[in-house]
Image (cartoon, rainbow, N blue to C red):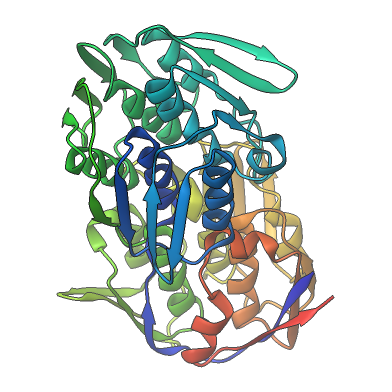
Length: 421
């Protein structure tokens, strides 16, 4: 197992190439199961989660060829069981459920796993598929889904904390081959959902309203192969925006799309960060002589402030000149990183879903433990600006969602490297 070692205090400057979005790539890979033809997917990030999805597709006896940032997938799968040892490591793997059910009329998919950030039930996935006409049973930790024929329906996918990206994806994918028209109310509007819809449309699906809370899908008898490029990763973009901000740096994020991050950009500008959109990316700069300004943040479904940027933003606000408040409304228990930031000298009080952050002048290097993907990134950001050396342990989380994070940071001036535990 590897750890990251960081010597903080270096101002970042240079160009970072933003990779394709993980949260687009995984459901799009699953969607390739909807056709017997070949799908070519470009701009795929080189991540552990992508490798896990490849293994799941191969376990279904689907042919997958990997060439750097391109996947060539023949969706003609022979098996319908997604095994526990793979699905249990990654929540997005449940996305094979909808395509398998639509194409094969039967699926066996283990309950998904992933990061420990609080309860994330899959009831909305099952609700959507049941409304389309499937019979679902739970047996020995597996979801057993069966149907004679999927039929269009009007489906409300509102959950306790709002819409669900993956439940919307599963229901949308299954509905593309259902008989009749499906209307999804309270559908997720995230850029990754739109990217998946565009992929399906390029396969011959008939989808409207896929950037709105009301999505309409008219089922077709067959989908065909296609070629598609994954959109840039907005969470990776936001993380490097914060790397520039926290170090008082000056980074150009090549291929980044500002339109996907308005809520994050708005809060960073409140904190005193200069952000400029250009034709081929986004420039991010903060004057190191000026203090970070405090702010208040509430995480919300898109286009609100993303929960996947909460931990990283907290690292910046630990250094703000004043008191900031972060309210987590998507996953109220997603604050495990607070104890680790406190080890580095942060002053954070947790009251229910609210984190009250009193800014300090400096953070100090320490040994810290990563609890989940985005918390790992938050600890790396803190390490970039902390005095002395920081060691981030259990970084396998990082490799699930960031392509070559340590190498990208090194190229723009960070002192960061990997060591074996």
